[in-house]
Image (cartoon, rainbow, N blue to C red):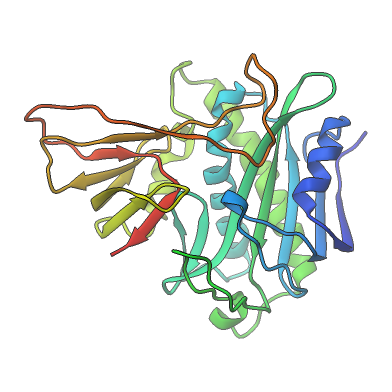
Length: 293
């Protein structure tokens, strides 16, 4: 079965549709876009405003890498979206916000949701959902989130959504394939972002700014200066007490582990604090996201 991009007028959630298709064996690169979603969602179960006029796309990904490395897919896909928009002359003011947002002028332009599962044959796969505001800008702002902005606010001449869909669809697949090939050529314990680390950090917003890292529940995990993101995808924050940094790691309960699969939308986070006496190094944070002070 050959992979292709299908566009429908309306569906509940393109991610949900492709999670089910993936379980039935849909191949790598199977894409589904919708003009409108009635049950669109983002990370942590947040509602994603899916009104007509915006880019709403999901893709089945079966990269030939250790599934534990799937954590790098959001960053790779985000860079691919930037590349696709750049080809259309639209990416001049757009950057990335750790861990998975597209931002411009201090506002949210889009987001990426990667969900992992196993198919009925036991093979791991992921679905990458991509939402980009094009002609419609949501007015509702999630708690702790950024106000929205659209491509039409940044550019006078924005191509048709279908043209952007085709560019983004192919860019993501090509980027994931290249990332997997480079990752497999590296040592086994290499971080999942290693093949794209320099490029990813170069496009990150808020480097050098004072930030707060929060848990999915909204609890403050750390605050300080956002220094970088390491090759494992962890944000490094220089705290006020540099002699006692906290290491907060996000651990996703992966469905491919040796236990009963978890729902693909469920993510578990665990905070682990370690002490580095008199060692001046930034804390390493893997929480739900960053808020700028």
